[in-house]
Length: 183
Image 1 (spheres, rainbow, N blue to C red):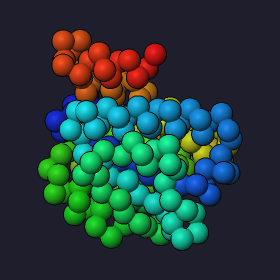
Image 2: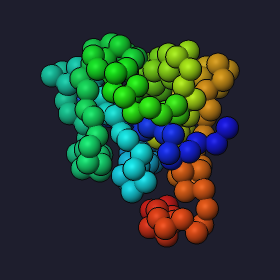
Image 3: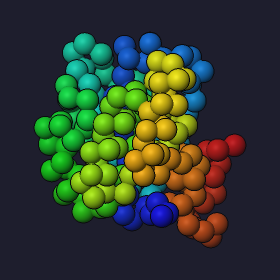
């Protein structure tokens, strides 16, 4: 199954200030870069974006480095549940987009990303998790979350795979602009 821009939604999960402070610096940096590339590509390719913030009063807002890259028209939803599907308005926003593929990026791999992925998959969505665009407080937690999702049939991929699948062809009008992000 390939990820198609015209059928995809990007969901950015809980990449917030206080939560980010608990992440290993290298993992946070890699996740932020990859998620930023996905946000940039989504904006240029008209892929809708839904972002969530877990208890923002306690964990703060989305990191400025990513908040500034959220494309026009994105939805931002607060939540206290771990799965995005429990957030007020999430299912309605997703259904309203009439797309059947969801690409996930964010924190934490073994909690909010995992629960969201499994519930979306159970709801009939094709779920892609960009492994370089997720992180957790330790590498073993990230590995465990990715392993569980893979075992459940969620597509674990790389952000570059998503980006090039969205483009589909080097002749795409946005190819040069988006491929330059990766250099």
